Length: 304
Image (cartoon, rainbow, N blue to C red; front, side, top):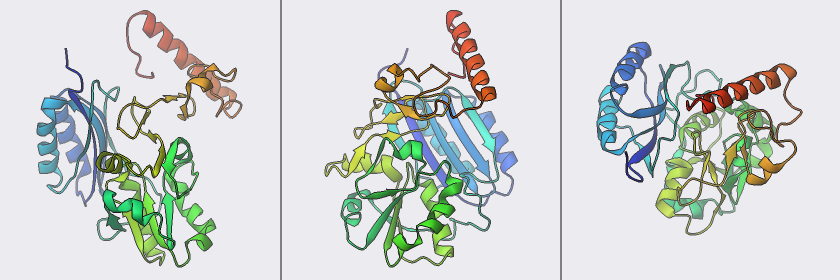
């Protein structure tokens, strides 16, 4: 039995050349399975990206192990929670720890200049600044900074196309970017610099650190922040937000959305109804059926 808020939800990343990611994956898997930890870790030659929840008293051991294994310079962004925010532990090896799909991108060498949370509010209202929300549409739909341009991308791979289409908006501007935890801005910054753009900036630590440090005192952040775990969203107090998730399209949905005739649990919501193939819909229906069977048996289905 755990006390309230005795879990830590943490995220981190580090762009650093890893010669043998498979060996590091194996070491990480062996060590983490000794703890009460759940989440996703992505490892590649370009570095590591992780988001996890762990019992609070075990966090220091996890942090120290990862720093010793990868880099002592890793910064962990933490929040308190009263339950696990992830269903299970997953450790994956991929070509990119966050996928932009462009060759010769190397944030380890150079990226945008950091702007700390306390200075961000002033920066984003300057006349010669343009602020880009580098997140995908289903993230920015439920919350963003007042002055931001939303890329409305389906995936981060679409970011370069958005830049190409919006070149005129960026001319002679100081370009500031933000994302949930900072990792996408590292790659986006390196990409823009290599494309010849000057005056590239990024919110240090991302939205979560901004809310943690400023408490959104100046109300420049509007709405909630989408997170990739069981909470779905968090408010500006870093508490679980008011959104649920559609398991068909992964979008954040409201209580009113769940009352819609287009909402079928696990199958569709008003944001995606009619957009899925018959094969996809059939797969979602079967998954929902298996979840109901598991629930009746008192078992938590991992597809939930």
